[in-house]
Image 1 (cartoon, rainbow, N blue to C red):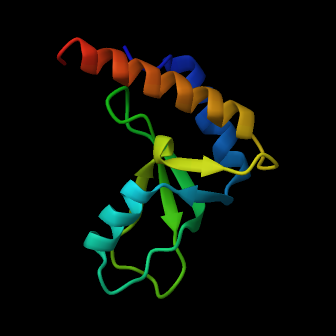
Image 2: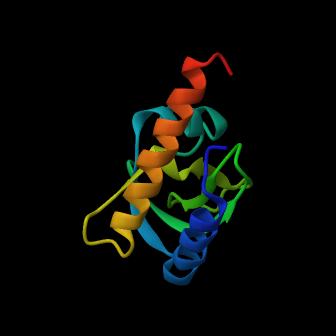
Image 3: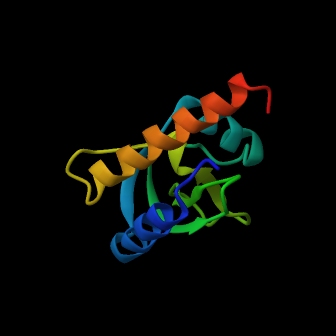
Length: 113
């Protein structure tokens, strides 16, 4: 199991109470989102406008407002591909979740899963 379900759900509820949150995208999702919506420039900064939990396999997913005209498709990114400013509400809790999830995913990869 990757996530501690109780902790993930607790963080999710806390996040839902404070969205929107400003975040920064890493380069990997910027490239993927640019491929998905080539007509729309993808900024490094965005707003997380909603969050949901996709289970142990996907973890916490963030729905992004990347600005510009309303896109036909939602822009969804794993919370592990975002960075949050230190003054962001819950930044410490988010960081703990991200580190734990990334560590567990790396451990799974090492086992050939």
